[in-house]
Each structure stands twice: as structure tokens, then as C-alpha cells.
Amino acid sequence: MKNVLITGVDGGIGRVLALKFLKEGFFVSGTILADDVNWQDDNLKLFKLDLSQADSINKCVEDILNFNQTIDILINNAGILIDKEEEGVVVEKLRKTLEVNLIGTIDFTEKILPQVKEGGHIINISSSAGSLALVGSGKSHYPGHYPAYKISKAALNMYTRTLSFRLKDKVIVSAVNPGWVKTSMGGQEADLEPEIVADNIFNFAVSKPESGNFWFNGDKMPW
Ligand SMILES: NC(=O)c1ccc[n+]([C@@H]2O[C@H](COP(=O)([O-])OP(=O)(O)OC[C@H]3O[C@@H](n4cnc5c(N)ncnc54)[C@H](OP(=O)(O)O)[C@@H]3O)[C@@H](O)[C@H]2O)c1
Image: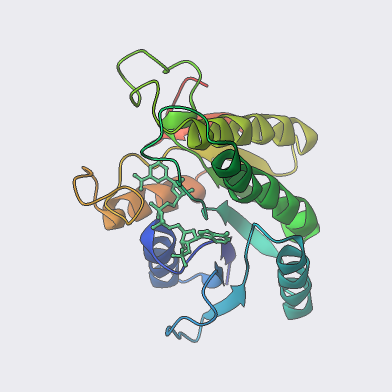
């Protein structure tokens, strides 16, 4: 049985993705921010994780290592968008956004890396909002909006790219734009159902794409 580790399975894309992997016969380790999530499955193990807290990251990694499972696929899905209505940078929101979407995600990944199997796949869930190439092109988000979120995803993309070089020929590393998805983050006016997105991400995750790229629905995206 193959193992996937997904961060942020409390709700949104992460939860539906975890359900998809369970349906496809994977053992799923999922992290939750809430103290408890009323969800059980023989092939599911939940771990508490707050990516904004170094202690929580250390404890979560320790718990996962004690559980002693190697990881075929790691999906860094957890993330926040707290400056949706802002047009300028609000430094406290930037700090918090970077703590979760970037620094916490990197800290967690680096510490869990020894558990990722050779031939495995690490996916960082990014966003078209993090594409430098698309800013102002009309294909991305209104240029002034949510700068903290955009900065965090652009930087996560750079982490993806540099990690892919470090892990060359050992582990595939990808950034994935899920599209605009109906979740608490995306809102109900979004154009994609989480189940469709989970299917797309699953199919991509089990494929063997060229490492170090930015993807949407199996097609390369510009950084
Ligand atoms: N929805 C979209 O349209 C869209 C578009 C592009 C990219 N994305 C990306 O897709 C990923 C999933 O987004 P989503 O739409 O599913 O959002 P969501 O519904 O808000 O889910 C985000 C997940 O991250 C968890 N989380 C929040 N803060 C955390 C923290 N400090 N530590 C650990 N976990 C934390 C949440 O837990 P709680 O539920 O307990 O808060 C939840 O499980 C994110 O990386 C997001 O940036 C989404």
C-alpha cells in the first residue's frame, strides 16, 4: 500500500484530496489545524499541525516519524489567504502569511524529507496568483489585490524550483496551481468543484512529470 501525506485535511481541497487518495487505495496521513476532526478511516491517520508555530511543526514531525511510515507522495496543501481585501501590503498579514504558506511549509518539508521515498513526489500547492509571468497579463488576479498571498506563493514556487535541483534524480518536486476552487478560501463563486480538482491533483501526483515545474491540469504554467 502506498502512503500519501497531505497537510490541511480539515476541509477544502485537502479534505477532498484525502478522500480521493483513500478511494484509490492509499494510506493517508493528514495534518489538521483543529484540535480534533470527526473523521475516521482504517487507512487514515491524523496529526495535529499548526504551520505558524515552530513547536507544533517539530511535534508533528516527531509524531509522524514515530508512526514510522515512509512517504510516497507529500502534498503541501495547507495555506491561508488573509489579505484578500487588501490592495497594499499590511505587514502583520504578510508576516503571518509567510509563516504559514512559506516558512512553516518549508520547515515541515525539510524535516519530513528523510521519510520521502526515492522515486517519490513532493507537490507544493501554489496558485496562479504566485506567477510572476502572469501579473498584469489579464490571465491572473487583479494586480493590486492580496499582495501577501501572492508573495508567499511566488516564494513557494522558488522553493519548489530550488528543491527540485537538490533532489534531482531522487524525488520529483512540483508546484501545482489547483485553479479557482469552491472552498472557504476560493468562495462559492469559484468555477471548480473540489472533487474535480482532487481528481486532477491525484492523477498528476501519481504520474511521473518532469521535476521542477509549475503545473495546472497536467500542463506547464509560466513561473
Ligand atoms: N480555493 C482556491 O481557489 C485556491 C486557488 C489557488 C490555490 N489554492 C491553494 O490551495 C490550498 C488549499 O486551499 P483551500 O481552498 O482548500 O483553502 P481552505 O479551505 O481554507 O483550506 C486550507 C487548509 O489549510 C489549513 N490551515 C490553515 N492555516 C493553517 C495553519 N496555520 N497550519 C496548518 N494548517 C492550516 C486549514 O485548516 P482549517 O480549515 O482548520 O482552517 C485547511 O485545512 C492552499 O494552499 C491555497 O493557497 C486555493
